[in-house]
Length: 305
Image 1: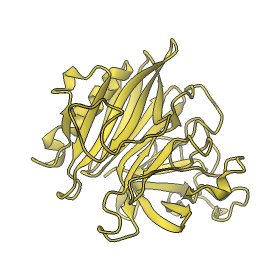
Image 2: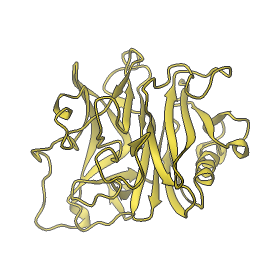
Image 3: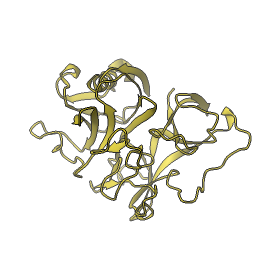
Image 4: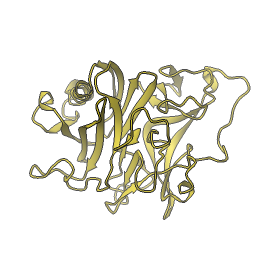
């Protein structure tokens, strides 16, 4: 795993900084770095790019990033994932890409100072961006499936903190990170590629009556209206922080299908603050919150070192 903290004064600079880090062989070992498939060089990135990862060495993981203007003050980093690459096709037309009308995004301000964090392996990338007092984030790459490789050969996850058309200033559940996605049955911040190649929309219960019947949800953030797993210790310390893995589960068919890699739900966190580091199980984690939310169950921990 490799980690990086960077700064940028514009969204294009931020995207190029992330891609520079991911394609640097010194961060992952020679031959293990992410490859820039399109365009030819990082400096050539103006509006879109496609990366290829090797996973465990036997995979071909294709991820897409696109810059899209939304009004006068917003630029989205639009996210996509593919099953292959064809130089003759456009960014949205690539083989196996998400076919929905709207895609997950990282909504950002056009020209402002931003700090960003990247935690990456050869199979997945986690990005968190500090935007004023809120935190936009993304998970792109493979999850850890509850299956053997032949049963779930390409468990690709594309998640942001909003989807196309949502303003960075929005305080509704349409603007909520991938581990607690809100929206409608057709558009949220989270998409999962199923074994048959179909893309499924993830939707948690966030005041939306559709969510309990959603084909895909995330646990433990989807426990409303009953907080079934939020267990608080009356004496809170850094040592008794509760961490749960984010599990992806389906209702059609019923069952848990996988776990997000390198990121965890955090409980007992009243004495923690965003950007704090905690040590748990011999590893260091960075703490962030869900966009602008500061409720006790809206924090997550990203594996750092």
